[in-house]
Amino acid sequence: MKDKVYNVLFLGTGNSARSILAESILNAVGKRRFRAFSAGSYPQGQVHPLALELLRHLEFPADGLRSKSWNEFAVAGSPHLDFAI
Image 1 (cartoon, rainbow, N blue to C red):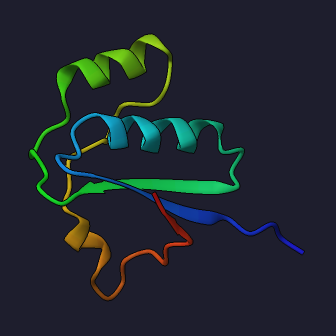
Image 2 (image 1 turned 90 degrees about the vertical axis):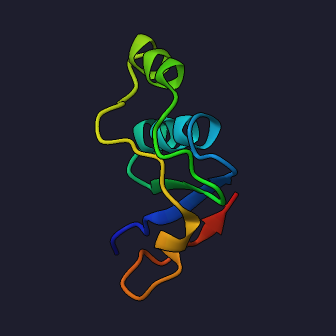
């Protein structure tokens, strides 16, 4: 039987730093058991440059990360979420 992959959504306000960091880190260290996403209630529209710099410095993936609204996860076709943090 194939192992289940759990979808995790990290929520914040601006979705520009902390939840972005959590998304990247869990995707990297989740051992393919977790697929992480992040979103915010009032997204800033861009990821904080220092958050991207920190991820790159620590050798975590930073490409493709973007600030997004939690509304993206409340529509048909969005990923089923197992956890929201």
